Length: 148
Image (cartoon, rainbow, N blue to C red; front, side, top):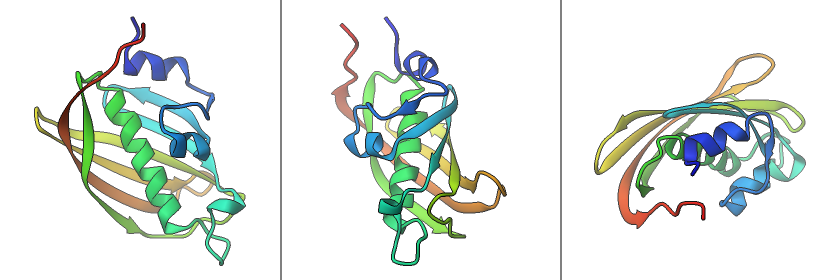
């Protein structure tokens, strides 16, 4: 039976609008690459994701980051769920509606209790670093449900 990494690899190049995360599905990422502990996806900024200045809203950027963290964690095929303890984001540059971003997440430490994940978000066309983030997650006692 397929686990997280294999399920994500089957979705490469597709728009992820039917994930277990309703907020993540709403974003509509295109999964570009995934390997153990790493995930990359792209997303075009839509008007409803923007602040009054026409740039991506900070909350939306945080959602983008949190979802990429989720993909990187899922790729580990862990036995239990992990949940965020913190999310530290540095917003470095803006990206406008209609432009495409690329989010890259990587698990830095995968421990029994604590996991640390780094994320970098780039402007897809210019490769300018838009945001960088780090998150610590903790293991829960909720088992990962396998496909039946």
